[in-house]
Image 1 (spheres, rainbow, N blue to C red):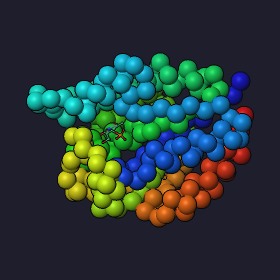
Image 2 (cartoon, rainbow, N blue to C red; image 1 turned 60 degrees about the vertical axis):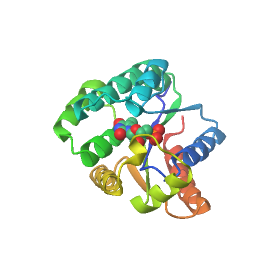
Image 3 (cartoon, rainbow, N blue to C red; image 1 turned 180 degrees about the vertical axis):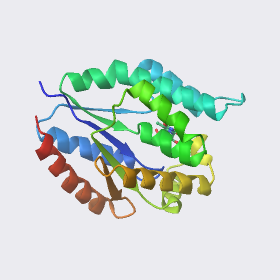
Length: 211
Ligand code: TMP
């Protein structure tokens, strides 16, 4: 049986990730492909507990290294207990964020050492990278304004605009460095326009990889 395809969706807050993930998954399913959606940090019961720790750590100070280790601990659980078994059984997996989020948020956003991030990535992933990464791109001002109208307010969402500008630039640099798997979608357009772009790109990916 052919291994499933691993698709990740990335972007700063307010780029419509959840809506576009639903749309994308619907398109895959409509092609008769067995697909599951999941998210990071999280995706397994224990990884979801780590997510809760990451998004709300109370009063205790958390260094960048601790945050990084927790993201990769959650990722290791998620990979071994959910993503890899699904791919091995031929199912496709659509994941809301993956290691590119660590590269963009912890690396470009917080300025953590990219060598440390890559060491952890190769340790935890053993060379596995997504087959396709959809980057929903929009200027940080637009993303922040949209996220604010949704009333989101966890620790990450309250970071200043400059942080999200660095994160966005980090994502764009990753896309430029890995054109073989990244597709940039301009998410500042209307929902219909964004979905048309996603549909167009995904049709090609599905016809190239359909089991
Ligand atoms: P979400 O709001 O898209 O579910 O993601 C939760 C937050 O975690 C979001 O602000 C991005 C952040 N994040 C990182 O900083 N590094 C990572 O590796 C991942 C997966 C998420």
